[in-house]
Image (cartoon, rainbow, N blue to C red; front, side, top):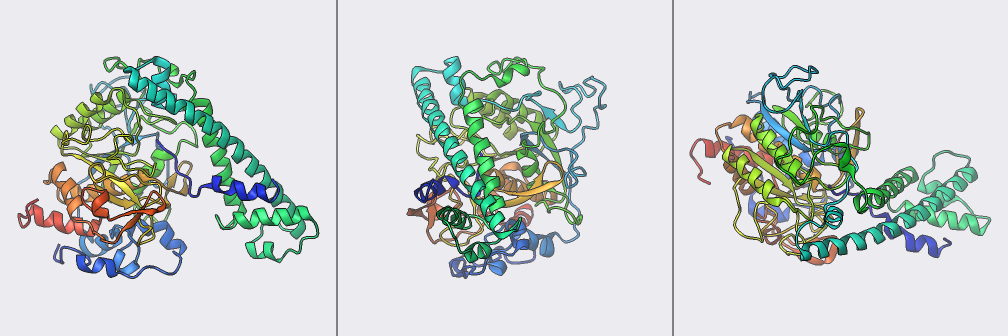
Amino acid sequence: MTRIFAKSILGFSAAIFLTGCGSTALVSTPIENIDTTPLKISDLTDAEKENWGHLDLVSDTIPGMSVDKAYADIIKNKKGDKVIVAVLDSGIDLNHEDLDDVLWTNKGEKPGDGKDNDGNGYIDDIHGYNFLGESYDEQLEAARIVKLKLGDAALQSRAKAEVDTEYAEALQNKERYEQIFQAVKDADAAVKKELGKTEYTKEDLAAIKPKTEAMQRNIGILTQMFTYEDSIAEVIKQLEEGITHFSDQINYNYNVDFNGRKVVGDNPYDINDLGYGNGNPKNRVEDESHGTHVAGIIAAERNNGIGVNGVANNVEIMSIRAVPNGDEYDKDIALGIRYAVDNGAKIINGSFGKAFSPNAQWVYDALKYAADNDVLFVHAAGNSGENLDDPANPNFPNDQINNGAEISDNVITVGALSSKYGSEMVASFSNYGHINVDVFAPGDEIYSSMPGNNYEFQGGTSMAAPAVAGVAALIRSYYPKLSASEVKHIIMKSGLSPRSPVILGGDPSKTAKLGEISVSGNIVNAYNALIMADNVSRGKIKL
């Protein structure tokens, strides 16, 4: 699971220390007119920022999925079937005010009696299952390969090179973040004292007439910070998150001597070593927020007057805790997929990924099992800004081996969009690939639920995948006879396909059209998908 920060603060450092330290048409806008849609000049309002992924390209000039339009014009008051969506992720805050009424409940299980009442092999699995036990902090797979000497010599060599490089870089980045953090904190305290205020704006800062070189330096540092965020408090928060991130890399992720799995008690490299974990898939600490954020994007209670609206309105969320603060184990993912399938999920959201997968076949077999049981798997493309078609940039799990034929037709891989329609539409962090990425969907700065009845913006393909899972849930709710494969192809074919080049990996010198960096060349559109689903279900269109 790769974390994404809203802005890269490492770019601050050099400058800082230089200064001193259905009945409608099939598509909502004609394909030939998409590229003539005017660019949005004004900044997004607060309401638009919190809901941009649901807005419409034509009416709002924002590359959302036309979710609001779909509810207003198509869904209206229609009754659909309940669809179980498994969130295969970190733990979810099961008591969250915007999620507590959309949780899947295993009616065959009696809570807290320590028995497997329904005989599914899992004890007390009321809202899902927890394959991590009480563990959370974990190594990345590369560190495990080095420690346990997994795989062949070539794999071990590649893993060791990554561990050595990334560990050293994390040490350096932590030190830089700590230096920047201290410089910003000191400057912030000095300016607050000078102004006699606990809060100030960039205009307040600009009005200060410095009497000392130290104050001139403080003003310079904070002026630069205001180019990244609207408040110094937000900058400080990001710096603290950065320090935590790099500390985790040093202490856990790339630390070959760390063993986060020992508290679980199983052998994670033995697929037949079962019976581990427990029936409580709740987040263990507040920082374990990823699953809660993902679940809210899919199915936060709609129109309840609080929080956010999920994409889908007839969903039960099954929480499967299998993604730690580090790389997930292939065993947990394979068993998690099978658990979801066996317990009624029709869609599985997988907002995780890793570069090494020593037991990838276990996951491939589980994906085939899901396909055999008509379950759709929605997967995040990853956040390295790289071309996944390059063999040097693997992202597991995937649905093919060495860019070959798909192993099954039930996997859809999603890249991330930003809210800026035009050349900057593909999020700078999003991976891409003409073979390995199917579609793009809103994923940058997405507002959703967080543990403790909180809400925050987060960005990543981790946020784009659940947006698509939500659209898939809408289709499966209102057109339940459509297969997982049909739902996948409806989502891919019904999207909008801008033809203008977009910037890749945040590098203006690298551009391509969406059709060159994804299978479909499309951005997902819920409105169009529901119309196409209606036509397919009535035999008017063949996929």
